[in-house]
Amino acid sequence: MLSQFARIRYRRLAYVVLAGVMALALGLATPTLSRAGLLDFLLQGIRYVELSNLSDRDEIALGKQINQQLQAEGVTLYQDNPALTKYVAALGQRLAASSDRPQLPYTFQVVRDDSINAFATVGGFVYIQTGLIKAASNEAELAGVMAHEIGHIGGRHVIERMRQAALASGIAGALEVNRDTLVNLGVQLALTLPNSREAEYDADRRGFDTLGRSGYDTRGFISFMKKLERQGGEPPEFLSSHPSSGNRVSTLETLNARGIYARNAGVGTDAAAYKARIQALK
Image 1: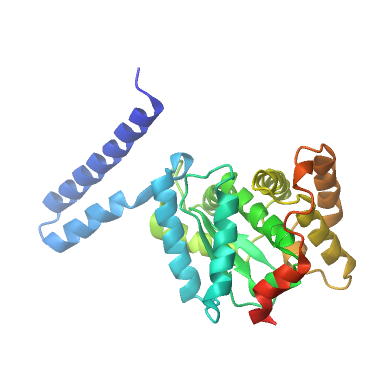
Image 2: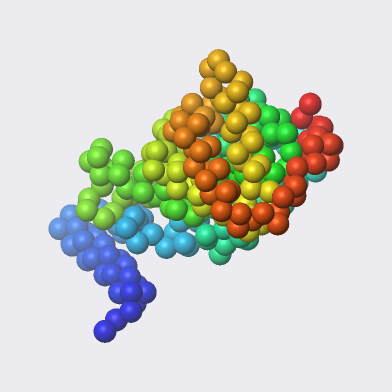
């Protein structure tokens, strides 16, 4: 009996062979089709992605393309202070090593935007906006938000949203979606469409454990959300597109009450040290 990995490999090989047969048939039936046109047709057949069994390799490649398109459409990376971006990247890698999917080559980028927000796409790409970095009071608070976004990648939430959106809009068959279409869909999801309530709660739980396993005070994310909630008025972007912050705080406090990561108390809560790290943003 074939292993799951072998079945997937044979299935993909079958797709490639089928694409080649279709291209050859079209070439024989249409004498005017050029050699370049035949090659293009064949490549288009191979560029379809099976969302239900997306490999890490394909997911990483897709994340890179989405990252390029995001920047082409106006997402501006902060590059004024290399020490700051290096600090955020190092913090992210520390968290990623203790995440649910540590095998991915994570990429953490700072986005020049004063709104309080962070988001993740696929393949390990995480984006932290400068407004959120300034809003955090210490490293544990920033790490909490970053761990939450890593949790979305761990739960493959964006991939599931892609699958649902592709099927709902009629751009996908039962299993496959054209890669270029997926890139555009990934950009749209990152910039405009919020995650589901269930995905946010799942990312909170995953992020909480990632934060704790990384050695940080798990109260960091809780204090950050409480602080934003107390500000009143129009909620920050990070909360306005997510489920009730009050309910999420209660869930996180319940997790914290278990005391699994009590030994981490105080780690990452030095406000003065954090201010010195991010002073370039002031």
